Length: 213
Image 1 (cartoon, one colour):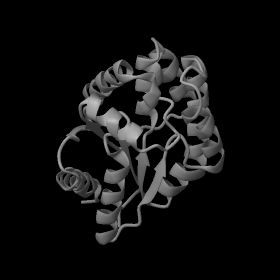
Image 2 (cartoon, rainbow, N blue to C red):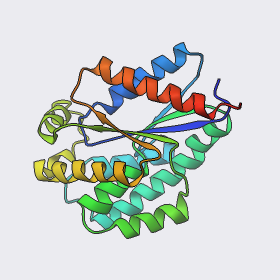
Image 3 (cartoon, rainbow, N blue to C red):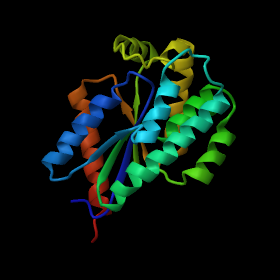
Image 4 (cartoon, rainbow, N blue to C red):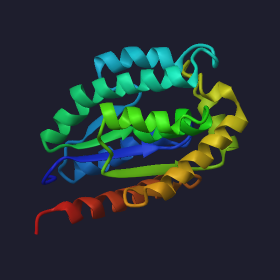
């Protein structure tokens, strides 16, 4: 088992395959004897899931970027308190579909010049970064087609259009360069099993590096 909790996040534009890769990594970790905690944002706790419905459903213009920042921060704080920190304190590996990097990109960059506001809210109310972040990257045209094809009813951000998705992709690429110590940019246009093998190898190397000498 991991010597201490490890917090791993998956990021990228909608439709790049984050959910698939999280499940595949969880299966690999279980086969190696771990009991990973799978969670998501917005959501991951009872209160945060209620806020999720406000954010991912409805008209694309429902909220301003500033309001979204506040709603995401409120959801993330509840998620952190109720799910993420208890799992880490129990020594679990936490696999999370999105975290603060998504807010930095969606609201901080692509929805307006709000990065300073996002960073202030994060510093004051969250104060926690992942240990390892996989940013899945692919052409927005293909990702948007995948995302809308799901028909999940949670398409508010996809419905903001292709130019918005291009801004998001550039934002995530910028995050990978801003935080190179924890971010790994993954080519998500390949076969899922090839992507999964790369992610599993990077995860295993990180966990091994944290083990006591």
